[in-house]
Length: 171
Length: 200
Image (cartoon, rainbow over all chains, first blue to last red; front, side, top):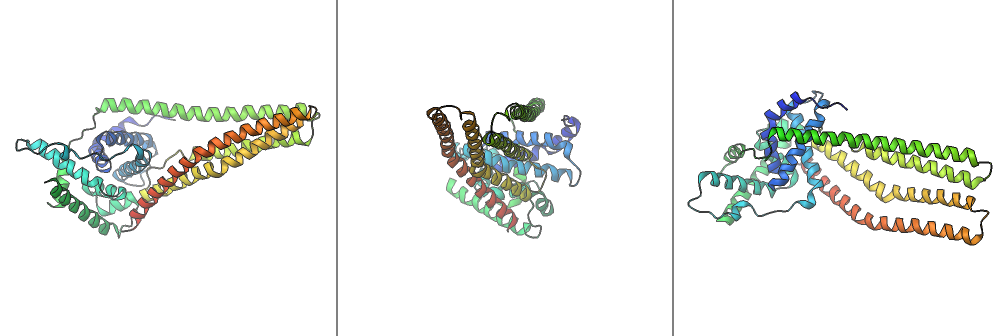
């Protein structure tokens, strides 16, 4: 079997690396497992790049591989996953906390709340957070294009509610 | 707090994968080489195994067919059938190793469900067909080969071989329960995800 085209792979990774990483962080709360998933997705893209036929947009192709690898990874690693306390519970809030820490705590709070959603909802919200259109999300996930808007609004509402509830709990 | 604020905060998060691009490429290369080697080994081993078995069975058949009767021929026929069943299972399982990741998630999940259903059938049904055929092949062969021996020796050999196969089957059955439970768990989760992606 021929080795994948390195140049095409580099181009793909340069333009999609950050999005793929964020999808991993949205889908899996544990940072080290998310890191493993990130590498697995890059590996699957590396393996599949020669089979790209151009039937879909490149970005749709990349996101489909990312999302499907996440589904598969979740099944294989389910037993290793646990729900650790989010970092904002572990780090005491202090007046001296600098902006960077506060911003990281906010992000971690968001990751934690996303992690409370159902796996399928986590995948959809990760695509919404990447600014994907409803049409793109329907194409990537295979959801009904007419229903995807309703579904996204429901998930957004649930996420915002979780963010508020957890914040009250935190305070 | 509104959703757009969350989104902009989300998109500004740093990429913190803990791995530089060059290191990553080396890892991918390494993984790729291992993948190719394992693919090559699996194919070569399976092909060589079947080839060797076919040569031996053919040789045994022609060398001894005049000396033995129907049971001998039946045992060879069972062995051939066994190999066909094994080859069919192995190639079907091998085909399922190719994941089609570039399809929409609902189609990917459907494929994964078929894959799990196949694994379930292999564990719960086909393995028993394989065991029965194996037992049949060994028994008919032994009955024929040990025909001139004393009844004690004949029945002892048959009894010990049957006991051995029963122990192997019993050990597999114990493992089977937890493996089936894990497959059922995976099926339930995938079905739930598929339902959530399809419905609103």
